[in-house]
Image (cartoon, rainbow, N blue to C red; front, side, top):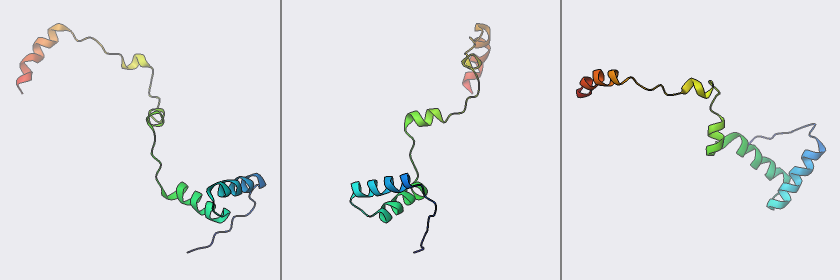
Length: 83
């Protein structure tokens, strides 16, 4: 296993790390390892809302408005339905 030294960490971050470690009943070092593993090695699953929010904005709703087909076109396409 490798060693990792993190310098210049804000004191508030250190306090939060120690508090989380204490709440989990583990050392700050073990908590630090757990956070790194979760952030870097475990893929995060998106919930439905996150997945929807990740869809890029590609236009306004009117761009996707359904245009009613002409009835005469339906008859012409009817002969193609056998294929």
